[in-house]
Length: 332
View 1: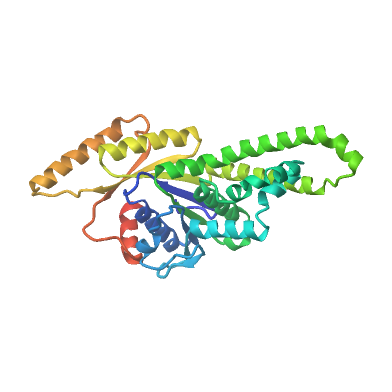
View 2 (view 1 turned 120 degrees about the horizontal axis):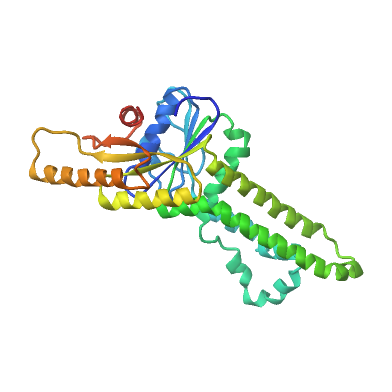
């Protein structure tokens, strides 16, 4: 994982509470200590990177993590801040974001007629799935912006399974949706071109709207290709040895396969270490864990993955030294 200087992306995901953040943060420290300028990004609305590094990383901007040998930066994506920016942008434009798009499609009159219903207020509020959309926009920034060009390893500490699957399927959804809007626009244009030539209406605004949509579509295609690129991207599933967590990991891998997202490794976290004298509770727990591990071996979705067993440790993993300790055990 540390070989090669070309940029690589790692997405760590799985059920809530399995230790994704600790695994992502320990991998980031491992990369930084092996000479890679590294960025770790949390896309989970309930961030815990700050807790993991024992450092304030809030604010939605790049913050350098203190401790590793090489530059390590962290970013907690702040959906609330983005929602505020969305509203501010909308208000600055007089809440006309929707009207501009409709104007660009030659449907401005329709918006004026519907003005009394105050649809603008509804449409200029942030849409559902905004958290995932913000994460996608950050991926686009990583691909295009000079600010991020120094990083050779970028790690995503993702939200629990459902959010992550939405995030990974969003580029496909937007690509298809934008394609439909552009086709609709072409049909409207051809139907209204005769009227426009009579009244001499300018087409610049329309073309601008179409160009912006086309640019967005191209960016979405880029993101989709990145998520599916086996040379530069890998999704690492994190789980714990319980029947419920293993079952969810199996479904997650099936969904990732459907989206053509490359998966090679499965981390099974919090495994009880060997002991000569087990109390009754530990003996039962160990038996349960053995059953879950056997499930993994027999599961057609999980059996082909490289299995990494991470022990349950007797200290809380917080701060760079603890993360280095964990990384040396997990990322051998």
